[in-house]
Image 1 (cartoon, chains in turn green, cyan):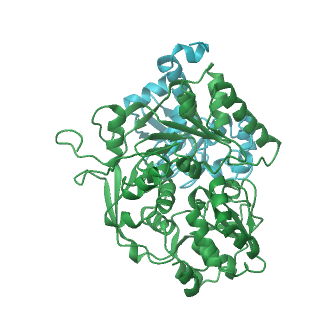
Image 2: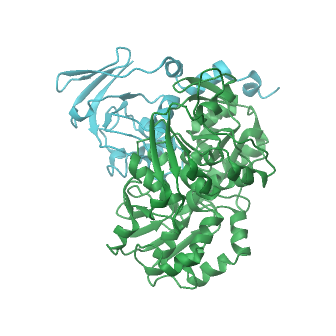
Image 3: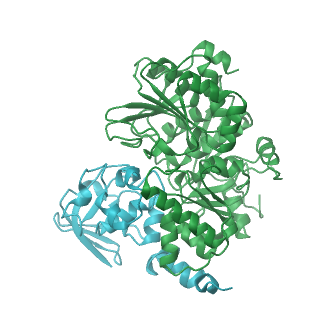
Length: 430
Length: 172
């Protein structure tokens, strides 16, 4: 409770902090942001606008972060020119947080990992998956390039304080079930616009048992239900993550009595591995239903801002065991950052993947948006740990994408058709 | 402001990958983007001669998916006068307000047919379907957003009302 008689959601608390007074859902605010993010697709548009509107010097270079992650290492001359524009702009304006090939990671893996965003921050990013940092209890949301240019000029952005949907978690995940299954299940309950303009706020006794990497996955896909953000409370799990980065944060959660536009309850122990069928992320089905259809798969992709963290690669490697991937199937593994890449090497995961017949790539968004590094041909079918399965998302307009967890993706890579982990794989996950 | 034109009709959940597929995102040039506007929802759409001066009408959640401003930029650069939808995805709506692409939220988009002729009066908050002889009342924007819209978009507002002088002059 921040002021007398007013109970607040976690979103309202963060906005109140930033506004310096108690605010409530529905209010429009003009606020300084802590961090504004752009990538190699969206930053060039912002830079052009900044120059078109007469910008000569950015308001505060230290709150701007650029990550060249979508079409990098550059796939063609046009994309190389786009990154060059961002690189030159960063140099000219003293923007030190520009992450180039060799230092970069996928933006939403990289920023929390490097401690560039933290609990309680107000963050905007010209990328829809900027909602990922809600896992840290930051209010973080995707905006457009013009908003990014607005931060170049003023350090500020405009906001409408959102209403929130309360998602009460209880119980614990079964073996082989993780954040990806939770969020795919939740999106199938809400629909792809069920949380439009709203924040998803996770709460309840089940939150404790959700790991930091799983929280990032859950918050990351809030946008796939239309959500403006997906917030977790700041608890011991968050504190341990932040402490490892030299950041000291206080615990924080919504008021019990806060007003929500809707409340749902999910018992984590009842969740099964869940998959979204083509062509929308809310087409959820359990793996037991889908495995029975014996859907033949051409390509498996494990990585992305959704599932490119070390815990994801560990799970995939454990499910693979010592088995090679199926004949006729391609499997591409994309660690989310240089740090994740190194850690995978240290733990022997890389060797396991390559020995099994997988391609192991430098970090990139690559195939997730049909950019490069694994585009699908006509009528090909993929299982991917990414976040969107829209028509043509990963390549040809007749190709299909099933969204799944690293566990399901790895099990599928071994069998060649869409399936979940067997008993032995579940044993190895322990 | 009045916008009018012939209707091109689309369905629900038209996402930004359909509006401008990622394979065309290696450029941010508006004219290039316009050529590929709506490519994966209606192949060849951006190169049709009757697209400039038309109005897009869609169902729910128009513009869902990625934050790419290339989507409203492509629509605007294609010469489309206005997008009318039952609802818009949040980031897309924000981008339209910021760049000055006129959009209208309208409950009754189901009753509008392909090739109908619409006339939209923003000041009166009214959509007239000339072909069917019907009129609808539209939602109006809250005061704060109207200020941004009336100043011609977010950057005009930000540079004239908010940015310190040295940002524009280069010397502090």
